[in-house]
Image (cartoon, rainbow, N blue to C red; front, side, top):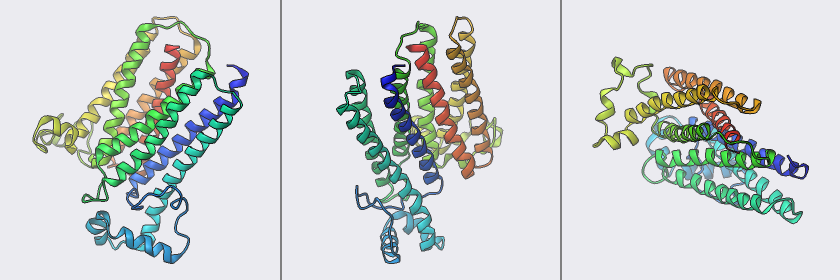
Length: 340
């Protein structure tokens, strides 16, 4: 690691930390059904929450015009106090997004002026800048889907927003790792390729985690290892939608079935990576990375099972999402050490 890159590395890793916090708060926002509390988006004027009771009442009255209140909360004795609670989490989520934007742009300009960035790193940072802006758009694109007729956001848009946040984090970490480990290592092609496959399936699993969250599909078939009625593949997997494909991407049972099944695939691929890696002479860091990856995937699998069995309580749902973040971190680090 070059000494002149230290501050750039700290900057990038700080961005990773902020993205992690963003995803955690996003998980709380989703699990507390707070995401539709702010019915508009303004870059500057939304920076602070309402600062008077009159402003709060005005925001609450605006919220009452939209489907979530009209179709759900109007029947739940929903008060201004309840509204302030859900508003806080959505506002906090957006505030962190603004902080991430400033924490990236200002140091980026500084490092450019000080010529601390190589041409290659500048290109990667421009990609990160685009990804951050696009992620902000995806957040509003998701929220917008729940403000028209349906009191829930589109599970496709939620999964896109969630997955892109994970990918943005992984790429930020990758750029930092390129600077931390500037020297090339010998690439073991079979391990690298298997790690790539495992990463692809992990991303697919994250996408389906978004589908499950968006459809509240974790609230059904709360059994394991079989689904309801002692069935490995429950009958409802095939009958909720018109076609098999739609059942697997829009049906609650179908989406949960894919998410359950994909978990075994991800675990199997990482176990295979571990045992195949023992045939090769690896560095201590490579060995450690793969071992941590194995521990994380088993822990994540267990969290998924318990989250399902207990009907997705807030703390378990959040823990499951956080562990997915740690698993992606370990997967990204392992792949980097096997690739460069």
